Length: 494
Image (cartoon, rainbow, N blue to C red):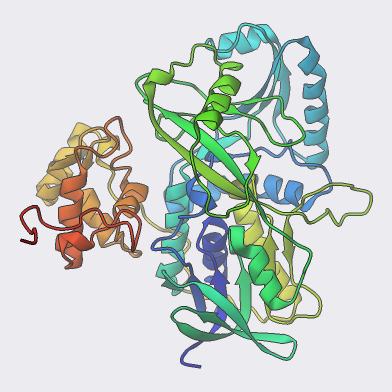
């Protein structure tokens, strides 16, 4: 084999990147691979960006344990990685008297899960806190530990911190098979060749079941993609203070209305199983369903202020809870499976996967240690990843000082979100370079405002071509096959 590692982590979503970061604390040679052109391009890129408190998960499940433990870790994680995180709290809002008893059920479930800071609120109190709420509100469950985070920033920051601590990241590297020596996995086959290892961590998200089956474990486990569609509203159109869920049903947490760390309001998602793991289509019927559900909470929502729509896929598995006496499907799979050595298996990490991710990473470390891996801490491990300058968040005095040091921070490229040339160049030359338009967007928020990139795209494309040393026609939106330009205007065959 051309190159060998101690651990290969498959999948660079939030869970895989958190795992790579956690393992980088130890004297291990680690490879993190992903088939996409950047980190955070799967389910982690298209969710509601909520750090769930933990009252929704069924007591006794691994999902509940990881949610509550992960929620408690996010404050320290955000401090170390210098990312946006706001423990703003969240509400489950009852509309009509028939929904009030369901709040009691969630309250009791939260208590059993160990969720702190919960309270039941009256209808009058909710109308006072959120004046835009449906006037027929009949009460709410308040969870003070709920929060919001920038999932793009969190995933990129965790990956950058892992790379800064010695992890090798290979993008556009798809797992095509596992190499076995008897019952032990000793490597990974990819489209870029074979890599040897002593451990494989299967954090492949929507494709985790396929990796499991290649390893010969859990043949009955299946990932069913569950599509959710969303609206994003202009931040000037509506402001909310926190996260508002409806009373959930048996299928999902429901269509919610939430603020974000960037100030926009997000509405969604609906919840529909689909057959194709790449089916992120936004449909008219789906958006109508989202609008109807959201207006049950905020009747005044003005969809003329929508600036974008998107759809994401949740990796819903079919593994039952393995805790005796808990009859529940599906639960998370996080295991070192019997019968196969050198594999840590993760699957079905749907919502609240983002909230759970730091705890999942810690559990993976514990599982490897329990399986006999000698984990020696590195004295030079640094958990801190410093953030880069964000011009729109600075005071005028701070901006002036920065521009004097580097005049490129005085050139506005994205007018809606006030993103500068200096920020874009810093992203291109970061520990994990931004090499596509969407990678710039994930790191700087360029192109996410009212004009949705109409103003900034030509200049961003020029900067990418200039800094990467590639022709303009090679600049892509999200990787090979999504190039922004086909040819120069006058390059026409006779």
